[in-house]
Amino acid sequence: MNESDPHDHQLRVSKIRNGTVIDHVAGGQALNVLAILGIDGAGGESVSIGMNVPSDRLGKKDIVKVEDRELSQSEVDVLSLIAPEATINIVREFEVVDKLRVERPERVVGVLSCPNRNCISNANEPVDSKFDVVDDGVRCVYCGAIVREDIADHLSVA
Ligand code: CTP
Ligand code: ZN
Image (cartoon, rainbow, N blue to C red):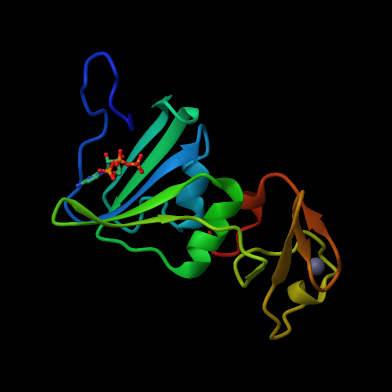
């Protein structure tokens, strides 16, 4: 059913001409999606957000539409950690030309920062942060620190 209301069939968020629609995001995670994409409004991007809109599949979902922007693989990898059910729709001239499911990566490199201040990845050394994706979160490859919740708070890109 997407973001249309089954009773009045009205779109809550209008269609976009070109860009990316991140659909089926867990309810309440839209602002974290924006953080992962590094969008805070200052860059001037056109962004539409629906939060906690009705969804057949998820009950409630968030949806984020970013115009004139396609996502990098590392952005998609991190998205999968907070929005494992997300669908990424690439839109060109109003048509969905590609629809991707996010996949949980085995490792994320360079996008999260380690919560352990003594970790080598925080020592101003030329070392990329590296986290293995484990069942209950992500684990720093260098020091073993685990981030379980609020992964978006540990973004080094935000
Ligand atoms: N969408 C949009 N602008 C467009 C085309 C699509 O904002 N020009 C949005 C739709 O509103 C929808 C999502 O992109 O939220 C996916 O569109 P589409 O594939 O047409 O919908 P469904 O087939 O229902 O998607 P799914 O099967 O993934 O639920
Ligand atoms: Zn560490």
